[in-house]
Image 1 (spheres, rainbow, N blue to C red):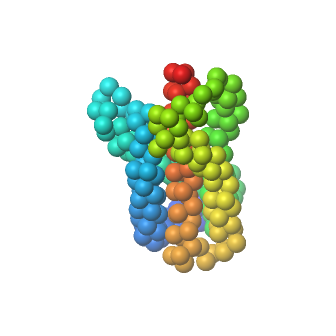
Image 2: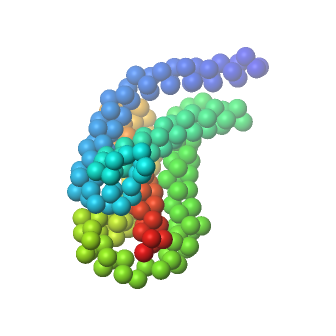
Image 3: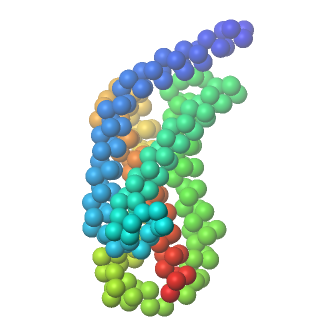
Length: 224
């Protein structure tokens, strides 16, 4: 019985993962290029905000803070996506060990569960556990100071901040909607795979940007 039970699991792990790797590299490459270009445009348009963040301070020349900020956020974005992929693989393996069938439904359950944790936990940490302390800090004059001294940072740190935070909601709707609405077509159609990759990396980018914005605001509020 052990050999019989193990056979489908081995087939799922070897065949399904190999097929996914063979087909997903193009959608992933498209999504990676898209988020990289989007982040580059955001950094160029809000260069003063990255000067205020000062990523790599002490090691990077001040004139290059925008570049260090770009690579910091980009690395965080891709790192989170890789973490999601690894977490999904581990979740699938554990689920098959405890009795789930090694099929597409199990894979989608694992992908969804890990995605919800990956997308929700950072915001839960920042906005519930950490956000109360941040919001309770003195903020008088912050908007005026930014407007007067760093107008190019104002729109990202103040205006776009909630937009970036709440963007994870429609991105999650797209990701989970495509994953569960189109069933096995997701395994075959490159367009659907590209939409999934874009929504996943878009979520990673939103979280990474939110982390950078929160870090900058903390630095400013402590310093003001």
